[in-house]
Image (cartoon, rainbow, N blue to C red; front, side, top):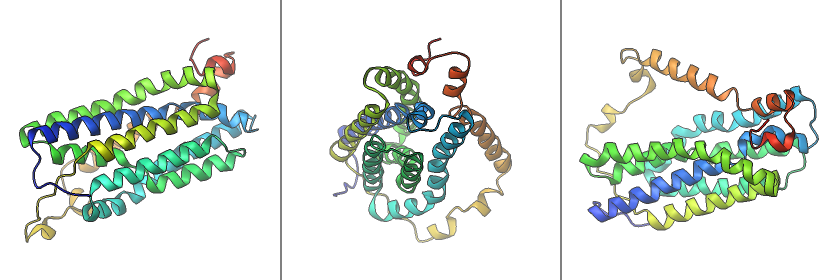
Length: 261
């Protein structure tokens, strides 16, 4: 994997398009099926709403939990071998796990695959860094904005597409479609992105390295982090139970995926 010393204007725009579109496809692919995971557990033989909620909550939560723990590890690997390789590695794992989820027959299989995914996921922050590194300084804010837009737009459209797919081809085949989404994202990054060599760190860089002990000394940092954590906690807590609630108020399973009464 060759690195270029500096990105020409055409190169950074090509990188921007590759990262932005791949991010949109990847985030949309994830939300094609994950909002309907409670219905999938019902198909796997878990019919008690309480048990479905527990299986869904643990399965949806285990991946980001492990990803958060592994983030520093993969960050160090990315610094050594390049971020593009780490994103390709993550997307390849999504391809395999999403495809495998279409063939599970026990609830714990879903949990096991989601646990495995946690060790290799987390390409979102790396995509942001890739966009920032390849863009000129005056375009960096716009580059980050486009990637953030893709990260928000993908989950907004993914459930809509996934609902149509689930009703037309079934939940199992929807996982295969999600896997195909990640194939497209991987090809975009692998073929379309040209990694830019990171600047050589200064001799005093180790003294300037950030750590949590230094970050928490920044005024209001812990307050800000706690607020973000609380908002994310509340926002994410509805996902595992919303399909169950729709079903409880009289919506049939076939219509839950489309969000229609």
